[in-house]
Image (tube, rainbow, N blue to C red; front, top):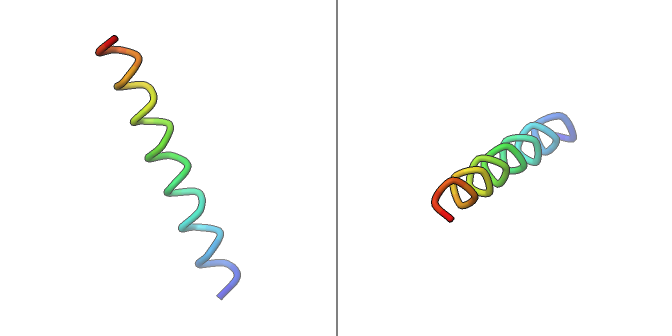
Length: 27
């Protein structure tokens, strides 16, 4: 269970990073 939670957190972090990068490009 702990491992899957870590994977979800990592995936969320990556998605947030992508969103931030796209927002910076649009600016």
